[in-house]
Structure formats: structure tokens, C-alpha cells
Image (cartoon, rainbow, N blue to C red):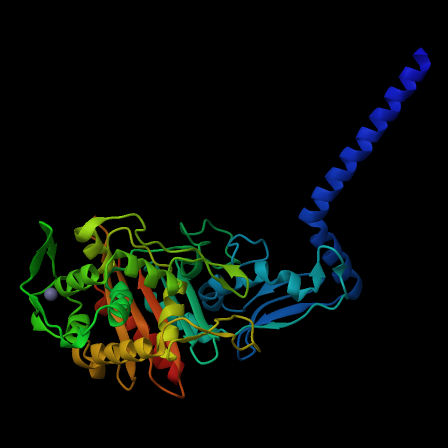
Length: 428
Ligand SMILES: [Zn+2]
């Protein structure tokens, strides 16, 4: 009897060990199975793969022996937000997120063949370099996309890092600000308030707004950056008048503001060919008129993710229909309606008027048929984020863009020249 008990115990122990071993193997397999399969496939076939930009310029390549990047440091650094690295430190780069695709790897079936796949991206490496240089060492984000096809032409985040540099990277270099950060939008959010007003306030075009530099809403003072006098709706947007937009936001009402911010995708997470972005925010609990006014001006607790803003302006540029942005070449669409057609066309015309009448378009953006909106988002510590968002109304160069310079100061003066440098090169 005693011996049987002893044996039963041994068997039980053995079974427990087998189960534990299997569990460990499964965990290791999910974690490292890809590396096992790929290193075996690569070592045996001697195959390699390459990641290239839209014109075939090499961004990264690998074979059984070595992992490589672009030849020059400027390209490696400017394109880091796009490529990431072989170690997955950024978490959002193509080398991390598309690695399985490049190897036809799946967790269930392993590699289906040993040949690695070359992957062509939609970005233009030279354009990324221009954007990164134009940021001039400041923190920020730049994105450009073709709003007719959804191709992302430029995605740059600064500070960045040369993946071959073994030194200590600048703080935040592994963060892709285009996708994984949200920022106070300031006046670029007036585009959302304007769109909501077009759809919910009757006779917007018959209304006039008077600005004497400040106003009071329910006893709370709202200050403007200027004294704009009496303005139409269109002039109020071009002046970026806080007094007018405080009134407009209150007129629109919080429920309508929330509904529009939500329907434009500004409160949602998105993804770029599967690479996730973060959601923005807008006050959802009742806040009362003074705070509602500030939220319609893009202050309050508003936060906007640059990629979500790009989707919104790209849709406005394209008659309200968004061509889903993508990073892997050879795809197009799908197209979804993000903004009502009439609203998009009206907003597009107002953005065109902004540049022609108030941003000195002929001087600041020579030769470009630009439609845009500036933003100078006050951060409460005396500094402000500079935003400049918009698009080219140009059949041959249908480009939408977002430029953000963190703590950069005024939108037009800090972010405008970055947009100009990138767009001038894009149309060349
Ligand atoms: Zn004003």
C-alpha cells in the first residue's frame, strides 16, 4: 500500500513537470518562436529582405548574416519613426510591425517559405529628411499624405535617433509623436468648431461677431490675441478670433461639439496599416459655458493626436471622403465619409481664404495653392505648441499635412516654414 502511494506520488510529480514544461514551451514559443523559425529559415536559405521607400531607396535590409539600415545617418535618423529598428525599441516602426509580413510568418504555421519579402513603403525618404531638418532640432511631428490615394508620404518625429548610434539617445527619441502622442490643439481645433457650426447653427453666414479683445461668458473672461472688430464667420476663422469662437462654441452646444469631434475620429484610436495610434480627448462631462467656450477654441482639456488631425484635414480636402491612410505601397482606400460634403467644401474654401488673406500666402508659401489653419496652443506655463495643418488644392499634388512644433511658439511663424519647406519639395 505504502509503495503504491509512493508510485502514485511520483507519477503525479512527473505529470506536473510535463505540464509545467509544456506551459513554459508555449510561452517561449509565443515569445521567441518567430525568431527560432526565422533564424532557421534565414540560415538555411541565405535569403534576405529589404525595406524601401516609394522610389526604391533602401531604408533597411537584412540577410542571414547581418541587419542593415540606410547608408547615410541623416536618412536613418529622419526615417526612424517609419522604420523603427530590429530590436523593436520604438514599438511602432515598420521593422517591428511588418516583420511577420516580410517573412510570411504566422504563429500557427511558422514561415510558409524561406524567402523573405521585400517591402516597399509609400514614404519618400528625401521628404522625411527635409521635414526633419526643417524642424531644426525642435521637438515635433510632421506628416504628409496624398488625400486622393491615402499614401503617407512623410512621417517624421523629433527628436529622433540614428539606429546605428550606440550612444545614449535623446529623451523621447523612441516615441513616434505622429502616432503615439496627443497634444493641446489650440486654434487648429477651430476647424472642428467651425464644421459643427456650419451643420448646427442656422444662418452662420448672416451672423456677425464683434471682438474688442476680450469678452465675458457667464462672468468668465475670454481673451483674444487681437482686437478684431466686426467680422463675418469666414473672417473670424481667418483672424482665429477667440471671442467669436467662444460665442460660436456656446451656440453649437457641448453635445454637438462632442458629436462632431467624435464623428471626425478625433476621440478614437486609429491604426496605420495596423500600427496603432492614440486617441485624443474632449470634455465629455458637463462643463458649463465658459469652459465650453475654451474647449471650442482648442484649449480646456482638449487633446488631439497629429495622425487623427491629418485624417480630418485629408477628408476635408477630398470633399469629406477619407482615403484610408496607408504606409505599405500598392494599396488604395478604402474610402469612408468622415465629413459631410457641403461642410467639407465650405471649410476647404475658408481654409483657402485664411492663407490668401491672412497668412501672406504669396510670400510665405510661394507657388502653392494652400488651404490651412494655424494653431498656437497655450500650455499654461507661458509656452505654446505651434500647429499648422491643411492641404494643397492642387489636382496634381493632392497633399494634406500636419506640422506640430512642440513648445514652438506661434503657429504661422514656427510651424508654417516647416510646412512650406516640405510642400515645396513635395511638388518639385
Ligand atoms: Zn478677436
